[in-house]
Length: 144
Image 1 (cartoon, one colour):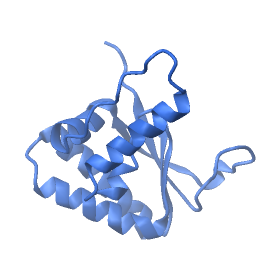
Image 2: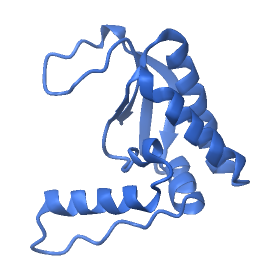
Image 3: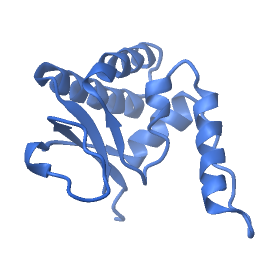
Image 4: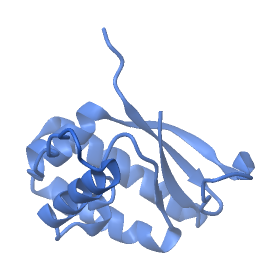
């Protein structure tokens, strides 16, 4: 069985900006992962975001990536926090003051779907948001 790509969920005292010199001392792995099957159930099957465009020979990779990010974000304008979790191959950060909005978006989508895999994904996001909020910590999703 092939392993799935996952975003590993961490809480941390302060948002870390990657690029060198980060201190992971305050980071705590929650034992939760958002798997590619969770992501697909939530974003493709429930929120109906469009699939990424195909990369064509000669495309600028940065422009291609940004074009797909905008297409993704514009397809779910009602959920700007969730729209930030655009790709399974990037890392995402949510500051403590953003967590109530992320949680509210997840709760709203959860109340409107019966997809069991999407509900599981949303429960993970809600739980992680709650745990980080209790501590006044940030939430980070790290691509494995």
